[in-house]
Every structure is written in structure tokens, then in C-alpha cells.
Amino acid sequence: MEQPKSPAEAVDLLVKLYDRAVGALVQAIRRYADTGTPPTMEERVLFRYPELRVTYLPTGPAPKVTRAYGQLTWAGEYAVTITQPAFYRDYLIEQLTLLVEDYGAELSVRVSETEIPYSFVLDAAGHAAFENVPTENLARYFPNPRLAQVGDAVVDGLRLERLDRARPLALFDAPRTDYSLKRIEHYTGANWSDVQPWILFTNYQRYVDEFVRWAAEGVANGPKGWQLSCPGKVVIEAGEKDGERKAMDAPWSKYQMPAYHLKTPDNDGVTLVNIGVGPSNAKTITDHLAVLRPHCWLMIGHCGGLRHTQRIGDYVLAHAYLRRDKILDDHVPLEIPIPAIAEVQVALQQAAAAVVSGDDEEELRRRLRTGTVVSYADRNWELNYTQERQLLSQSRAVAVDMESACIATQGFRLRVPYGVLLCVSDKPAHGEIKLPGTADRFYASAIGSHLRIGLETIALLKQNRDRLHSRKLRAFDEPPFR
Image 1: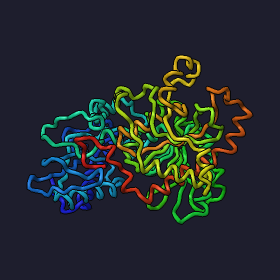
Image 2: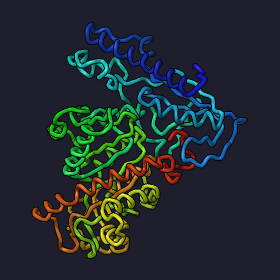
Image 3: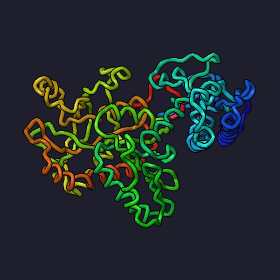
Image 4: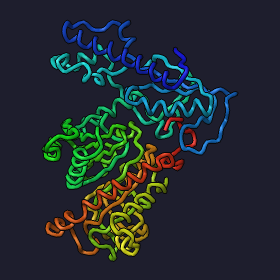
């Protein structure tokens, strides 16, 4: 175990130990592919994640900080295994600096007892090294993912007793993080490291088309160093001709939830993910994106309006959610309220005012409703309207969709600030159903302004990011890291 003198030195040690472990594992995989020689027990000791530990002495200071994270409640040791420390460098230094400066915490770094699964480093090994080796043979001789070690016990408030009695330092450990990083690439088609800290979710491809046009123009004419990363690992560089066409031609249809990332040199760009229709996809991708600790995710999609005063193209700012999708009931019981995040709500309303109505407050009142959104897993919920009508009326719901409640509940569960702004595309309870001609006119007029509201909201939130991470999202016995 080594005791670094500063957070930066601690991260340097994590990078050193991690690179050494991955290098040893990759070398062993290549040797086995070439010669059939498996690793020895002595070699397998090298295939382990580094571990970061923080010690808070009983004699240390006990400041009363107002931020929602970076707090040490109990004296003792906190620990977590770390993967990809070079990527997480700025995040780790930021979190550790708060603990060292405010609490006088002592840092230490060592090799953990947790092995790195071989499948998490196969890209680093190069396909030629293992493409002809049966996976069952690799699993016999090399560490492989064990589902018993990959879970959300800390996220869901379950107490895990370690032999060393250390408390969790972060919500996600290394195996859980690596598992999700691989899944992000599988589902979205882009490099996980391209994901930006500001995330927009949508449920229609036309929003993607609008985002690509906006992002491609930004790459072509915006600040130096901007890039657009697309599915299929297609990257549009600054100054590249026909960037929009190249992005549109990216093989997005091969992936379940294609993602597009407008990358900036300061890693403060925007990601758009088309999650498609339904709460299952919404849960799947948010489970994985959460390990990257984004600053915020927002849902911008379509909904059915439930009030006769609404018109096609009006907006709904969700203040509450009626969860009828059942997708998260086992993780977050229905009796637990999902609060609105004030900073996000204010930014969404200000952005809508700027884009939709300018200085005309009456126009904003006419176009924007706030209230409860109900989410179903059944797209044909209308067929049960006679059974659902009383509940919809009692809840005072103003809109219905399939994804918003899951996006918000996952944000609450995974400690990621969240918000939902929907656009009314039909009014099924009032006979205004989505027909081809009406739908096309709606799409042509509404999508561009809706996307601009989402982007303007992110611009506003960036100005106040420290207050964005609300204490509403933190549990009683919360890990120190954000």
C-alpha cells in the first residue's frame, strides 16, 4: 500500500497500477492465443484492479458543508476499486480534493483482491490475439465477469459488510463500471469515452436528424477542437466537408439506442441518445450511463395531451410522475415520491420562454403546461382507457407517455439530476389521434424548437452546475463521491 501526498499523486498511482494490471493481462492473453500457455497463479495475481482508500480520523475536522456530495459522515475507512483512472482523472481529483481540504482525509492506494475480467480488456488486446480462441477456453484460464460481483447494492441502499469494515467510497466499483462501459458501446454504437456530461434522451429519430444538423454546423463553424461522434464510431472532425451527410450516413440502424456526442475540448459537450419507445430501453441505458457520473439528463420527446385545452405542439413540463410502467417498482417502491429538481425545472421553463414566446408571458402560458405525466409500458394503453380514466383524473395528469417516469426515477435512484419536457403530438382522450398528415405537419414545425429548448436548458444549467447536484438525491448514509 502506498500513501500519496495529494489527490493528483493518488490518481497517478491508480493509473500506474491499472496500466500494469491491464498490460499483464493483455500480454498473457496474447501468449495463450499464440502458444496455448495459460497464466500461472503468480501471474494471475497481477490481473487485479487498483483500490483507492480514504481514511477519516476521529480527530479530523467536522465541517458543515452545504454541497450535496464530498461529505464524510463517519470516522473510519472508505474504499472502492477503480477502473479507467486516466479517464476519470479530473473527477477523482475533484472528489478527493474536497475530502482532503475539508476533512483532512488521508489517502492510500493499493492493489485490490478483485480481478479484472478478461472480456473487459479484449479491445486492448487486439482482435487478432483471440479471435480464434474459444471463449470457454479463455474463461477457464482468465478472470471472467461474475454476476455476484456486479450489482447496485450501494445504489439501492443495501449494506455490504467488507472484511476490512471499510465503507463504500463511491456508488459504483470497478467491475460494475467496466460492465456498463462495455454495454454503452454495445447499445449506442459509439465509444463510451465520447459520452458527454450533459445528456438528452429522445424517443424519435427526427430529433436525431435535427441534432445532427445543429452539431455538424457547430463542428464546422464553432470553436476549435469540437468533434461529432456518431454510431459505428464515425467521427466528424472540425473543418471536415460534408460533415452532416457523413453523420447522417453513419450506421445507426445497427444499434438499439444510437448515440451522438458533440465533444468539446473541455469535455463539457452534449450527448443525444435515441432510446426509442418504451421504459425498458430507458432503464437499460440509464443504468449504464450513470457510471460516467453525468451532470444531468433530460428527456425531450413526444406525449399525448390529456386536457382539452392543450393543442398539438404545446409543451408539458413534468413536475410529478404517475408510474404505471412497473419497470422500477422492485428498486424504487411506488410509495416513494420522485421530486422535481428545482434548478432543472427553472432552467427548462426559462429556456422554453426564450425559444417559444420571447417576452410574451401570455404566449408561454398558452403553450406550456406543468403538472403530472403518467407513463405506461403498454403503448396501447388507450384500449384500457375506461379502466384507467378515474386514476388519470384523480392524479390530475396532463400528459401520457412511456419513458419519462423511468428517466426521472432512474435519475433519482442513481443520483443524476433529471428533467422532462415533452411536446404534445396527439390528444387520444379527445379524439385527436396521430394520423399521418397531422403527424408530418407536427414534426416539421415542433421538433426544431423543442430541441433548441433542450440545448438552451443545458446552457443555463452549465452556469449553475455546482447547485445542480441537489441534496434531494442523497440518502442518509451516502458514499462521499458524487
